[in-house]
Length: 113
Image (cartoon, rainbow, N blue to C red; front, side, top):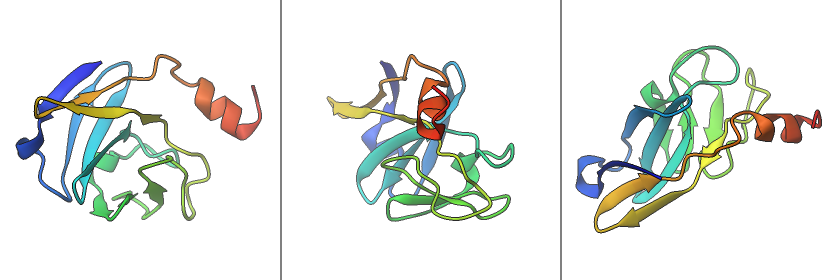
């Protein structure tokens, strides 16, 4: 579990980036906090630089959108999901529970397990 920031430091519609085994972005989507790997699965672009609307983030490079709740891409050019990480709030601090299985989820979703 990684303490990322205080709740008030991340206003709605904004994101923050930190590094674990990979760069991870934390988003405040209308008061709900979500964390995903910060690299678009289509091309090497930081999702934390993207546009957040509701529970979705749009990649700043080619406009692929991802559901922050599931990591599933909503449109092309992205075809693979981004890895999600559980988020908890404790004492006003946003904590991310970094997934230990770096790329296993991607293989399971793609049926390559």
